[in-house]
Image (cartoon, rainbow, N blue to C red; front, side):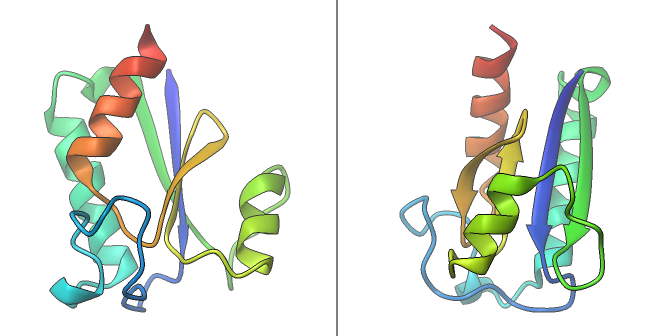
Length: 110
């Protein structure tokens, strides 16, 4: 099982800077981080990876981040939310690109 964690603030729109070169549907789309997460979860569950992934959203203001030290430090240091971690490694920040996350999960599966 591949664990994917999205760290963000559920009801906020992400800032304009993202780590994917602007293809993640960040602030230009006016989607909240929660909506972006829901699209990612739906996309992955309906894909061929559906049985292989576990996806969760952690609100950095409301949820316990213990056990997620890298994401917690990145958030505290001002890295743009949302953060997307695959197998506890933060790979994306500032937005969620479902295709890029899918590709990284496929790589992680070997």
